[in-house]
Image 1: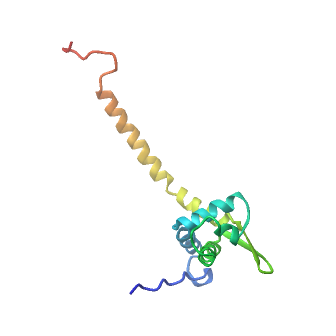
Image 2: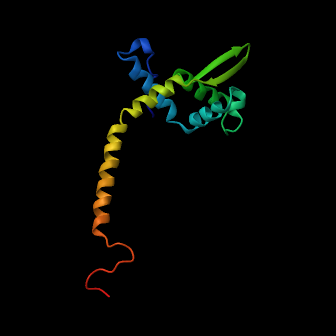
Length: 136
């Protein structure tokens, strides 16, 4: 038997709303269907039925994916009667990008160390077209 997935709490129920937002964004981005939905919404706002068209899953399943994106703050919905139009909301994604960027210093330091190491390897190699001493 599988364990039930506990829904993420709302922002007012956590100590740090920013951390909660990041949890929701990264959870939403962890699914390839949701990433594909975001990509399509990046082109233009769409109806849920239009979002469902390319997927081999039910309209109800796509609606659930869209709700995860809405809860993460990545998608905004506008209702007109029974029609629901979805559009991309970039604020939450920007917050995640800022968080990821905080670690760029670490990666830059790693790339710099790699570049230095590669230079030491190049110094030990003979130059192309030049013979090493004692070899013909």
